[in-house]
Amino acid sequence: MRSTLFLPEALWSAVTSMARLPIGIRFLISFSRDQWYRAFTFFLTFLLYASFHLSRKPISIVKGELHKDCAAVTEGDVQFNSLSRQPSYLPPQQPPSNGTDCGWAPFDKDNYQQLLGALDYSFLCAYAVGMYLSGIIGERLPIRYYLTFGMFASGAFTALFGLGYFYDIHSFGFYVVTQIINGLVQTTGWPSVVTCLGNWFGKGRRGLIMGVWNSHTSVGNILGSLIAGYWVSTCWGLSFVVPGAIMAVMGMVCFLFLIEHPKDIRCSSTLSTHSKDYENGTNRFRIQKQILNEKNKPLDPEAQCLLLSDGSSGVHPNHVIILPAEGGSAMAAISFTGALRIPGVVEFSLCLLFAKLVSYTFLFWLPLYITNVDHLDAQKAGVLSTLFDVGGIFGGILAGLISDRLEKRASTCGLMLLLAAPTLYIFSTISKMGLEATTVMLLLSGALVSGPYALITTAVSADLGTHKSLKGNAHALATVTAIIDGTGSVGAALGPLLAGLISPSGWNNVFYMLMFADACALLCLIRLIHKELGCTGTPTGDQVPFKEH
View 1 (cartoon, rainbow, N blue to C red):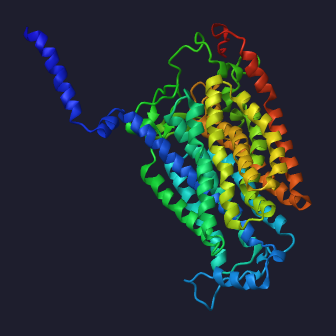
View 2 (view 1 turned 90 degrees about the horizontal axis):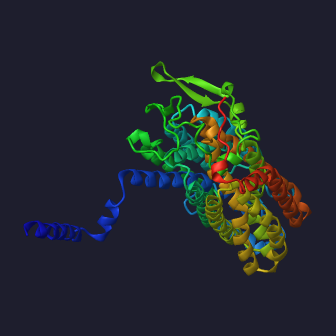
View 3 (view 1 turned 90 degrees about the vertical axis):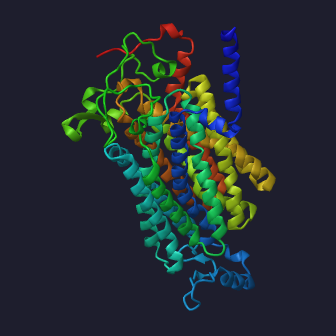
């Protein structure tokens, strides 16, 4: 009898104990320590890279203020605007001066579009060149220190551009040099955060997780547009100084809180490979060995589709560099050539070149386009342009969700690129019909343009950086990420430059250029799409395993 009463008493005790805990506390303790650290890393890296994009956006917002339409400004308006622009805290005897009523010299001349395009090109070309080196350097340095340095330097040079307003600087060379150095130091961001996130999250649901995470791009752009737009009409220098200060603050947060790898705090990792040993001090994996016998293990469809035609892995042992580690042990880091030989890297890199050309043309020229077409001032155009980034958030998440469900990254990108080209044509046609049409097309275009770009730079880069042909070499992730994003940054540099050169002949020609770039991006993926669709009919049990060499 006592045993039958014991169980209800125990259950009752447990129930009453749980009842005494608030619902919120019960929710918090339902997650494990590993889950909390993983969520913290997700949120922190999200904020860190959002601040990078926040600091890049002001130049596109300020363009409408650097050059004004003289014909639309009456003499009375000019006098009022020049008085209202003077900040109250500046001494009256040294007010910033535009030099002319058409904008800020030297951007007040008829060739202002070429000069503004050159500013974009300076930043993005330096970014593209620096990105190839950044991944190689970054995988040989502690991520936290490397990223912190980049954020402090980026904040300083972003603010330096804005100081040109307060010190009345009208030298075109000053602004170009500032953009070049800022482009170089900003390359520290992307390989670092992608590598850190790749360390914490495995391949399962990677598309969805990184699709949500990659919305930091759009969130940063939105915040940058709102901050820059708030100051642009009264004191455009603060449109750069404030984002630069935010960047520096986030750099300090990175230094204090970023955890590079789960093993740094003895958390479990969800990565598919298991390292034999790990060095905590320098975050270096020693040469890893496979726990399972790869000969007898069937491949997942995605890995099979990315293999070479003969089923062999693409990385030769000669392309793996053995680096000295502390204590005299050796560790592996893949070379630039070895990373290029990973199946799919070249195709996705070239695709991103054209996809990023389209995305960054919108990033740097959309506010000016809205100003010219819808006849809005710089502040309102900047706010309206954020709708493109809102669409980009949904596009990135949708691309990740679909690619996870279908297990076909290239096909997902190809479908969105196929739909993006006609959408851009419709956008160029009906955006002149009013704000309502512009609003709808901004959301749709943002989703279709940003979807492939987001998927390639996050989930695809992480997939290829941890590709099974690497046999567990974790060092490849930063290098592969840098190669893919560096190649994409070449397109990012060309897009705004071409827009500046083509736009004087009409905005329609700019949209034709963007549609052609989308078509080229789709063509770059044709082989991988065909390979993915060819895998559809292959039963899982008949998949060809890796060959040992």
